[in-house]
Structures are given as C-alpha cells and as structure tokens.
Length: 223
Length: 258
Ligand SMILES: Nc1ncnc2c1ncn2[C@@H]1O[C@H](COP(=O)(O)OP(=O)(O)OP(=O)(O)O)[C@@H](O)[C@H]1O
Ligand SMILES: [Mg+2]
Image (cartoon, rainbow over all chains, first blue to last red; front, side):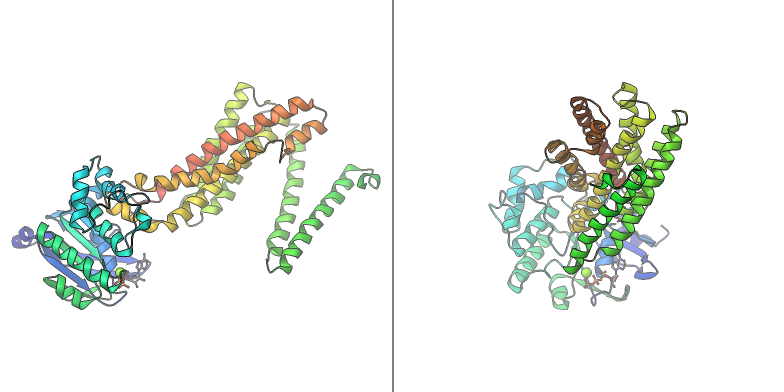
C-alpha cells in the first residue's frame, strides 16, 4: 500500500497488477484499473479476452495468482469472502435462480447473513425491477427477462456498495434486452451505485457507462 | 446334475464357475449384437473376480488357523482395498482415497467394532470376517455412489452454487441440497435392500447358514441383523465421506475448486 494518496482516497475499487494464470495460460495479465465512487465503468473486448475472468476476480470467485484488489483502500484478501461478496453484488450472465418462489430468491442473500427480508422490502424490490406482485411466483414459470430482473432484485436485496454486471442482457432477446438495460440504468442512477459492467456490445457500453476499459487477451489496451 | 459327474468339490466348483462365466459372456455377446460393448471390461472383471475370490479363500484357510486378533488386520486390509476402489469414483478430487478411507473406516469400522463388542457379531473369525466384509463392501459401494453423485451434482450446478456464493452465502449452505442428494443416492439402494429383504432377495449369508444347517428362523433374523448393520454403516460412511469431500470442494477463500 505505497501508492499516491489521491488514488487512495477516491477509488472505491482498485485493482493492482491483477493477474490470473491457469495451467500456464494467462487469463488476466497485470490489470490495474480503478473505479471511483458512483462511477459506472464498462469493460469490453472480444470474446475470450478475459472480461468474465476479470469480474470473477473482482468478486473473488476466483483467486488472483498475482496482484490484488483494494476495496475502500483495503486489500480485499483481508476482508472475509462472504462480507466482500455481499458488498460487491454480482449479476451473472444467466439468472441461476434457486428453486422455489421469487420471494425465496430475494430473501436468500440477507438470509445467508441471518437477516430477515421484510415483506414490504420484497414488494419494494419487485416494484423497482418492474415485477410488482411476483413474490409468490414459482421461478420455473418466469420468462428469461423476468428471471434476469428477479436475479437483479436478488442481488440488490443484499444492498451492495458496488454492482458487478457480467453481460446482464446478452442472454435475452432484443426487446427484453432494452427493458433490462433501462431498468439497470435507472436503478444505478437512483441509488447512486458504483458499477462495473461487462459487455461485448460497444453501444451498450456507451449508453450505460461513463468510461470504457478495453480488454484484449487479458490486458487493458485502452481506457 | 453336475454333482453327479464330479466327486471332488474342487472340481465341481471349477465346473460351476466355468458354466456361470459362460453365461455372463453369453449376455455380453448379446449386448454386443445390440451395439453395447462391454466385452473387455466384463472379461477382465470375470477373471479378476475369480482369481481374487479364490486367493481370498486360500488366505482365509490360513488366517482361520491364526490367533483371533488377525481378523482386525484382515478387516483393516479390506477397508484399505475398499477405499482404493471407491476413490476411483472421485478421480480428479484431491485426497479422494483419504476421504474414502475415512468414510469406510468411520462407517463400517465403527459399526463392526461396536456390534462385536455388544455381541451382535460373533467375534470368532469365521463369523467376524465374512460379516465384516459384507459391511465393508456395502460401505464401499455407498461411498462410491455418494462421491460420484456429489461430483456430478457440483458439475451440473456450478451456476447455482456460484450464484449462492456471489450472494455471500457460506459454501456449506450453498451445497446443502447437493450433500443431501449425494447421501440420498448412496442410501436408496440400501433402504431398498431392507424393504425387499426376503421377498426379492434372499441374501447369501442366510442361504449359507441354512445350507450349513442353522435354524432357518435364526438364519432369517440374523440376516435382518446384518442388513440393518449394513444400512447403518452405509449411512454413516456416505455422510462422513460426503462431508469430507465437501470441505475439499472449496478453497480457503470459499471458491468452488472442483
Ligand atoms: N478456469 C479456466 N481455466 C482455463 N481457461 C479458462 C478458465 N476460465 C476461462 N478460461 C479461458 O480464459 C479466456 C477468457 O475467458 P472469459 O470467459 O473471461 O472471456 P470473456 O471475455 O468473458 O468472453 P465472452 O465474451 O465470450 O464471455 C478464454 O479463452 C477461456 O477459455
Ligand atoms: Mg464472458
């Protein structure tokens, strides 16, 4: 932790020469980026350039083989993984909902930390993702777009400080894509969330983010 | 019919073995006609099984003449061999052998020791070794089933498991349904055995005891005793091995590593 002080103060999330090598292949190669509070940063790049790998490292679903990540100037390896993952809410490309009702899915994250999610909070969350009255629906009977919205609400139920989105709309058809994209933008704005969004769609990157980081073969080639 | 031709039991046994092996190979041949290729594996398994069981029979002849504490070593050896067999079901998971061994030793070992102390298993070698081996063999199968199922559950549910982790849940919570599925898969055959006992299945031990002249009612009750011990040992073994393998499925930083 010997960096310049102004960096230390402004960045919520900062990677320092973050690297991951698996079986001799370098997936992420000394990536150093920073994300300031309230900022929305897009990560783009061709397929296989390491966008998902980078996001998984940010959330520590994978372990860096070199470098590290600072969350509020604290090396994230000092933060218990469950706390870290709760603070860095991640939305995966596909929703992966737990079997059962929509409400059960929303209550999962808080429940994992021994907190109960009030009925009113569930209703508010569902309102905010445009699915009022869906609490008791069985997740098997949701459309792809609805499932992704539930997944977003599930992540938001944890009240994350930073939102990590991995191609949140790429599994959806075009109409649903725009709907979910707008919804995400609205929520980010209204809650002032800091956000890293991975997308292969350059237009989506410009629509959603203030700044774009371009990855190629695991390296940052422009920012 | 056969016994008319062979006066010597050894010759009779070999003739019976040949006939039953031919039957198994005929089935394999039929399968092959239907594009199901099992011939190599079956042939190897037949030869191997025959050699092993004859070797064990010969060793038992020697062991039965030794002091009674030898049976502890024989059972320990069986547990090691059983662990090596079931560990192959969990290839790719580090420490699969150790996990299998602890599972089998913890499940079968505890049941055998406890039941012998309580007098449910006759401590004489001629009884302890065959009954113990049945319990160990079942524990081995259960451990293999549990490990196999747990591994395939994880592989099929990576997305859900990581979604749970990403929400800040503990690994144990996230894989709880898969632990349950694995233990369930391992226990179902045992519970079915108990349910079908005597109707679909008159087990070898009872048949043997009746053939050897025991009271059929006592033989029947004792067969129930053995199957109940098998259920207990299998349950314990599959729980122990699944919980141990669960611990190895995640890194210290709670990342899925299988
Ligand atoms: N666990 C792993 N072991 C080995 N290689 C991996 C592993 N995970 C990902 N890779 C490889 O790393 C590279 C980057 O993968 P990644 O999923 O991060 O790309 P991406 O930029 O998200 O691509 P896409 O746009 O197709 O989603 C790919 O070549 C992939 O095959
Ligand atoms: Mg990707």
